[in-house]
Length: 56
Image 1 (cartoon, rainbow, N blue to C red):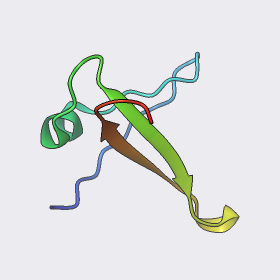
Image 2 (image 1 turned 45 degrees about the vertical axis):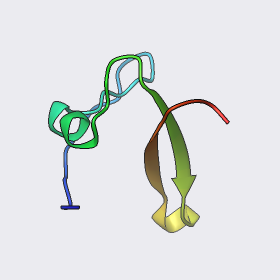
Image 3 (image 1 turned 90 degrees about the vertical axis):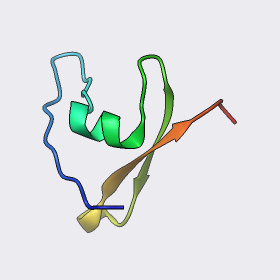
């Protein structure tokens, strides 16, 4: 998989949107369930989003 990079702002209600090119590459559809994880140390945290078929 190719590294893809995109930017998105957090809105006033704390939401972010996933840019269209990323959604297309990963195959995310409207209503798709995603899992969001925070990984790394305090100095180097990053967010990982996985598409899911169902909640665990």
